[in-house]
Structures are given as structure tokens and as C-alpha cells.
Length: 408
Image (cartoon, rainbow, N blue to C red; front, side, top):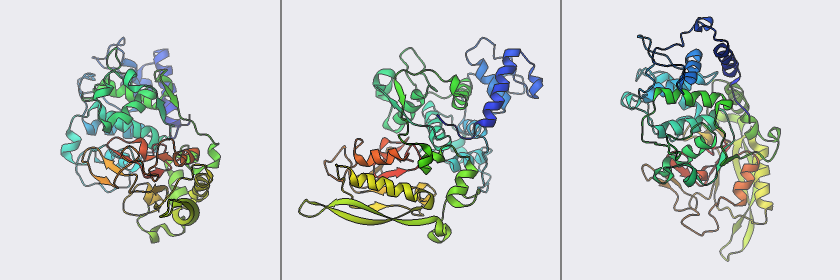
């Protein structure tokens, strides 16, 4: 399992662990990590000490930590942003809230995608729920650190309250459990997503995010490993790059995070020719040729992906195909996303009910619907591309594939 931008944090954590083991005074690191209300025997004491040592979380002026106190959204967003090495934002501040800068950092890293926390004073002052925490952790795992996803067996058995977890959060909770970052709040492994996140819980989550050895062993989840070497695909290589390396490779500028137009993209967006199958009016499959615009760094793997789809015995039919576009700041504007048959593979927002497209494999037997076991999903996965059909926090997008493991 690879880690992105954790080298410095892990090095500091090694020193923290050594300091705790040797009982060195906190002053040796120039920070105060002792709190009057954090007894050494409590389950959270080590997590709090590590986060305080790293400057991710602070205590109060009276020397307390208040471990049971609920966190606000802005406070947890600050903790997450502070835990990401080399994190910075180029977005101009508007003076909305003290945590606005940290919100911008996470937004630019893709951590806030589909979480539903806008950058407003009222939103950032609200108490953060455990559901929202799980969504942010999941996005950090995959959009920042590029970790591989987990396949969770029988989540309805291993997560005590799984039946009451809404579709908007099931994927996030499953991945956090599968990674061993979360383990439940009772003997049944219940998640309790509507409860607020406490300061003690947040400290544990952050340490487990940064330090895999702190995570729980999970017997009911397996890591979905790449089937080819990372060097053969930009999607896999991307997972091991720093922010600056990613942006230089994609945009030619370490301070740039997306293209705003075709002229802005210039020759970094190229056109690739691919062959696919389609179905004529008589129901017979025939060959079509498409010209798709993608980022130059993924051009070869996109051609390879569609060659695999075309050569597969399934002969999956494609009637509509889209690549780069500049209507937002996400993967299409990078030239690193592909949409296939949008009418038959809809996008739906769980919260608003808004849809793009008409149906999907769950509601239709159309041959144009992309199914989880299809050659299309397998071919993209082989080269490290994720599928939006596995779902995110507030939406699912069956037409969408991108270089992120989450398909975001």
C-alpha cells in the first residue's frame, strides 16, 4: 500500500512514539501535550498526545483538552487540512469564516466532493456528524493519499446499524471500517452516524489515517489491488506523487489545479482515436470509431482501456462517449475522466434527487447499461481508473470513470 505526502508526518510520529516510550518531556519538542483531563490510562490519551505533538489539535487555555466535547465542522476541517503534508491553497480568501482557508485546502484536494459542507459561516459552525467525518476520511484516503479501495464482505453483518445507514453514506462507512480506521461504538460494531464527533474520537481518526499501524485488523475486508504494475499507468503513478508532481504532470504548473477552457489546456489535451462496438437498428453489433479528448499523460492508457473493451468477448456497445470538458473543476477539466452512455447510466444525487440520464443497470436491462461485472469496469480498473458506479457520499454516477480510485 502506497502513501502520498506522509513522509514528514510519519517521521515526526516516529519521534512522538519514541518520546512517549522514553517519557521525554513535551518541552523537548517545544509543545505542550499534557492536559489535566486526559489521564494516561484512557483509550484516547495516546492519540491526543500525538495530534498535539504534530500541531493538529490544541488544548484550551485552562490546560484542559475536553475530550468529550463535540467538534464543529470547521474545527475538523482544520484538523484534516493540517494533517496533509505540503497542503496549501491558492484560492483568494473572502473572510467568510476562520476555517475558510482550510476549507479551500480540502476543496482543492477533492476531500469535500459530495460531502455537502458549503463554505459559509453557518455551515462551518455546525457540529460535525460521524457520517460527515466518514465521508471526509474516505475522500482523504483516496483523493489525497491514493490508497486502494477495500471490498467489505457482508457489511450488514459486520456493521451493527448498517440497515439504517442511508445510501449517501454507506460507501464511506464501509471504506472507513474496511481500512480499520473505524470500529464501531458498541459490541455490535454500530457506527452511530448521526452522533456528533468528539475531540477524542477525532484525534484517533486522524492518527489512524496517518499511521496505518494504528489501524485495527479487519478480517471481513480485503484490499482491491492493482492488477498491473503502477509504472504502466498514470492512474497508478498518480497515487504516489506529491501535489506539485501531480499538477506539473497534468497541467505543467505546480500552482494549477484544472483547465478552464480548451485554449487554457493547449496541447496538454489531446485527441485519441478508439474503436468500440454499437448496435444497429436491426440489433446487430458493429464497429464505431470515436475521437475522445483526454490529458496527454493518460492518452496511452485510455487507448489501451478501450482496446481491451473492444476485444473482450462481451463486445459492450457504446452509443455515447465523452472526455475532457471545462464546465467544472473536477476530473473532466483535467482531461482525466470518461463518460459512457449517459442516458442508460445515470448520475443521481441522493439528497436532492437530481439526475442526469434516465436509468441504470438496476432499473433497466438495456445492453447499454454498465454493470459492476462488465468488461468496461474491469478494463478501467486494470489501468487504475475508478468507477463512479460504486457510489460516493451523496451521489452515484454510473456513466463516469476517472483516474481516482474512488471514480470521483
